[in-house]
Image 1 (cartoon, rainbow, N blue to C red):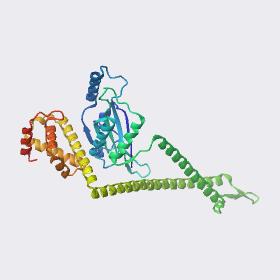
Image 2 (cartoon, rainbow, N blue to C red):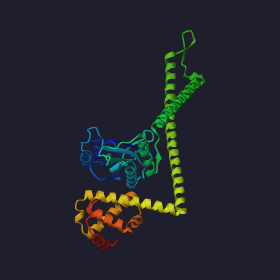
Image 3 (cartoon, rainbow, N blue to C red):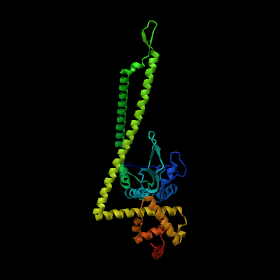
Length: 384
């Protein structure tokens, strides 16, 4: 399955659409609960922050035609998690300075196949990004190869195939149209041959209506004969059209299944190679383990940050309430991202990481004023 990521200027109603703040007629409401959302900051607040920083850094106001906040639609798989998208966000920031501050996973959009009536989901995610260069205060400037890099990162982080380039896609589209025209021509030729054979067969004689005149000679009754031929042609056309529709539907289903098979084969091959390396190479295992635990830690911190924005009284929680809130966040993060509890245990073995995470849940990302002794005492009481 191929993925792609394309950033454009953010729309004014982006948050309404992305976070389903109102109902839309093109979504399946029964699937909306499967959507997932993460927000670090509202777009209006981020834009104000960007404008202030630009003036502070460069001494000038942000240009009117600047596009400091942009949004991308990313094609994802059914089992793509918020953790996968946080990993992509991290790579975008590290390599292209693009900072993602909103993510919405949509699994309630799609369409019904007109032939099979089968639901065809359109799995995708919306990434809203801060496009400001922190060194200059102005908007980031990217070249064409940077946009190509975005596609590479999306494919790598989401473990999907990379989308084809624009020129190749257009070429494939033209080739497809040519092939379709050739198929239509073939069907027309077959229909013509069938009609010709039908007219030349003995059966065509049965369509001719004759009657005797007053002298006893047989004459063809033109109007009734033409009517009979029209009826046969109409019946043949209907049957041919029906066969054509059924054939196209079957071919489409076969093509889709073949695509899925090829995608699964690639996934199996990739994971076999990866598992083989993990089992036989200690260095690879250690690197992958660290990479995975860093990813889990990043996802957990993002979840805590979101909770601190939603819940204003976190700083007033006592130790017992703090422990319950932490367990609630851990369970939710584990369920949504398919993270085993052993992964969290691996993170909490590191005392510094544990202290940092506890500080985040009580004071938020930028507040950590407690002494080391207080943190140690809290960990002892919570039983971590």
